[in-house]
Length: 351
Image 1 (cartoon, rainbow, N blue to C red):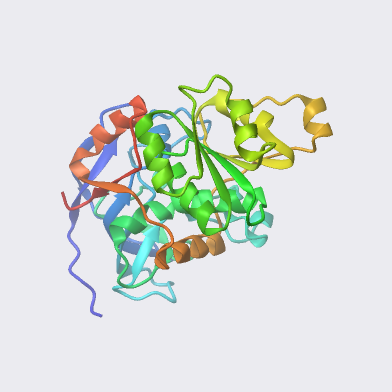
Image 2: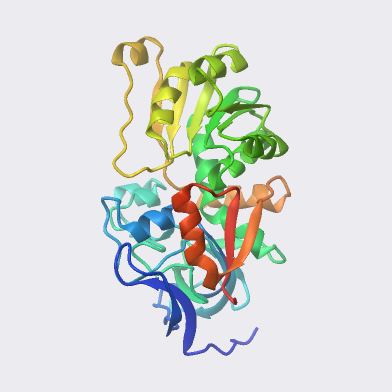
């Protein structure tokens, strides 16, 4: 396929300072480095991490000015001089991990996301809230031809992240997994991946609308934290002794602490959500005697990414998305700050 005509400028949403105005404006189209792809981003999911990047409230500094976004799905329109294995017209995804050194201990053990030199889309590298973006050819996700790119976009972070977290919980088919924050962008996908992997799901969130939503995705039990008088007792009762694993995708510090209490003996609590400055507490005696594991789970490696996309390609995962124009992105940030996100928002970069 011949190379398409690439414009000199493009539309993007940019902020100059952390917490500053989110500006929808024209910026130059980037030139890919020798190891990079240039991707015409068609759609980009909006992640809670994008809110943290804008606020600058994590202990890792962002580049400034910054184009956010790290769930970009699009078409390859340019190849760096050293790129192999890709061609113009391929479908490609921009992930949180844009690139890594590939030489350190972590990279050699397939833990590229833990590389000290990791380059992060929408954080240290301009991301997918623009019409054209660059991605390291090694880390860019391969998306099957004919895929609905709007629905695939959230898989590139939310899907991969929860799939990796479920693997980290090390569960067996038929065991109970509790998902805290189950009706949000991450949780709604976690429910589906858990069901596809053969687990029984307890969904924890607040509100009748979220209860209906979570059960429609496959949750066997819904526990409403706004109505429950004792979350810990309710989870234990629903699972006959406690969840075998817990996936914490909420940003509630209290919810994380509760999860250590309702996980059953020899179970695993997995931390995914990253509320700024939060800490988790666990009684040492109880954790030791019950042999409870508390593990952090970051984004997946290339194999995790391919597996997560394969579940989606086989129709086992449906992304409940709402599509809005890129120019409307600032209003989505407002909804995230208010905690009013149900499912996942995806921006169409052409609007």
